[in-house]
Image (tube, rainbow, N blue to C red; front, side, top):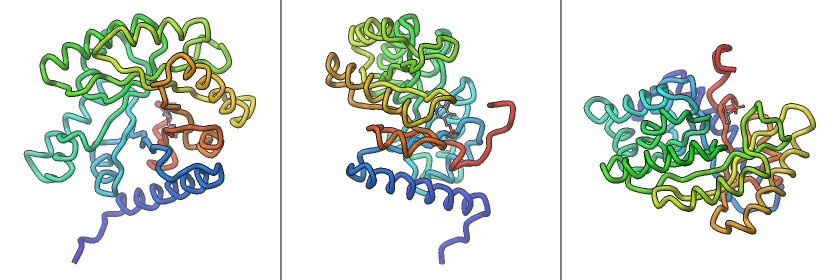
Length: 257
Ligand SMILES: *Cc1c(COP(=O)(O)O)cnc(C)c1O
């Protein structure tokens, strides 16, 4: 007899299933293929126990946005190996479960991020590329990671520098710098739709920028756009990775908004 699910696991099972359904429907409506769009479950501000529950429900890719919260949570998950949930821990250890950094990175945190992140989605200045390149090279040399660190350049859709993201005159140089490092791999672009103006318009703009980017960097195939509120528009306009938090885990504490 399978054990009955605890209430939180049941809640997460329902919301994860609902988001997967939304994603499948959006992929079908866009005439795209199932499996074209990765679901990154954003677990920032939620405990390691929720990540474990989501792994038991089949989620394999997670997004975190802050240090040291992320390192601590992932250390806690890895420590599971020594105690109760062998299965969750061995999947984390084997790399079957991936954690991406989706929040802005400070140079002094590059070392710890390079220790756990598969990818960084939020690279928007040359200085952080240099710091991550150095940190990833060290982590590879010390066998704290096995693969180069994947880099997505966060692009600004409305040119407002206060909200993060590189503008069109900045991202070409950032991309070249990523390609100079053997410890980094250019994977694509990430964008967040501004609040005003309509998700459809911004997602179309993100897709246009990505197409221009691909002309120079054909290997950078990932388009990371779409969150709880706009994943349908993102998928319609070619997103290959949606980052969904609230619709799966519930509201974050007010402090985080
Ligand atoms: C928090 C966050 C998300 C998830 O947003 P929801 O609206 O909760 O789905 C996605 N992307 C980034 C960069 C975030 O910081």
